[in-house]
Image (cartoon, rainbow over all chains, first blue to last red; front, side, top):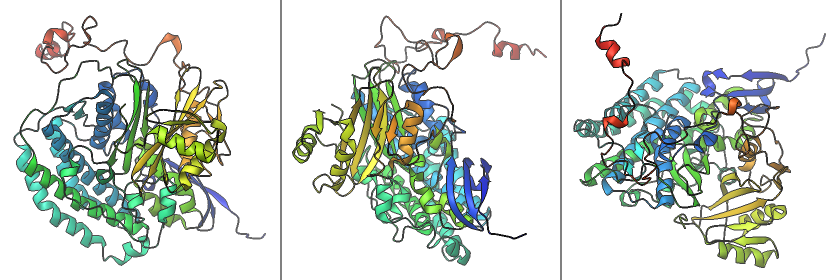
Length: 367
Length: 200
């Protein structure tokens, strides 16, 4: 009997910690090296786009919470901005500032989750994850204080936001943004000089800038490859044109760069929140809209820069209260376009770290 | 009408495309340009390579069922020039719609086309791996089609109408505070009363 090195099929998931949700990978292995990879998704498919065609625009906002459940605020914001442009609804200034504050808090919370689980994937089991969850917890408390929910917030409304934050919100937010820079330095010190983390992430999962653009990558996955593309700068919505912030980019396009881009973005988000707190005016937090809003017939592609990149809403109206077509451009799904190319030819642990660095949310993939 | 802040006028794109490839444009509006579905790959290639348009990224690809035809919609983005070009291809064959794949031009079309194939049933010729994405092989039909009636017993998804909508006065304001507790259906002896009487 000979012991030839034969390729074999390995099934990872759908329930596996390194797949970040009910996401299944079917890999053909030759020893430790991946020869082929196929992803099998759809375990969380709820057919939101079909369901949305039977509901009014306002009734569809909660669906967007459940699409990307780690960035509910950003998804709420995206759909509200799209409908507002379609229907020509004006938003009060105070609501725009509140939207920016909550979208940036969501970005910090989501990046804490993404970076924490990535460090876990790279072998630093749980300790950094729990450090990063500490501030995420405080952010979720702020969400709960304002709208009663922690993950599925359903906070934004067409024409504004659902509630003005309660009085105790502002001191708690001030405390958070004051301590945030030292906390971020603490996270950075945990991993920046860690030899294990550097060995597991530098030079791993490299995506060139040209491939990232051609493969429709967005968000930190695109910026990690050195492309300074951020919709908050390119197409400023809400009041981002009044904010002073930078767009961090990576140099090599590897896992380490994507991690550092996210870490730096939390610093920028903290600064944006501080500026918004200083500038926010008094006034109403929403405008009145008809109970069953009937946008004129037409179509719109509204988009925002979510934690995972461009969240797009392609809406087609036929003049009735329910959308004729409701398409969500999901960054988590489209960022996986290059997964097979990244994984073939590398070892399994490197592929797991590469997948972690793309920061997928399975609810967003399957919708 | 509600064009994006950096969305190019479809007429301008149509003029350049027609000059480069005669007969490729079938219609143009202020917002988008419609191209011959057989030549969609050629149109995307030209926009991708052109210096004037520099459509480097396919930011979104989706489709709309118009009952007798399908619209395939491409949102193209130039990252350097910061503008957006919207291209559409109208597929007249509603029974077996097919269009050339955008994958040879944009690798980002890989999963987006699989999604459209799965949910809308549009075939993309030359796609390297055209399989269903979310649903399983053998699933009957394509759910996002308007004629897909997946639920038995004549049921439809969603509510027949908005719960408190005043059909006689559809523009009644939602936030004006004129919703009273009487608008909310409340059954006698509900959850609250059984708690108060200490049922068990």
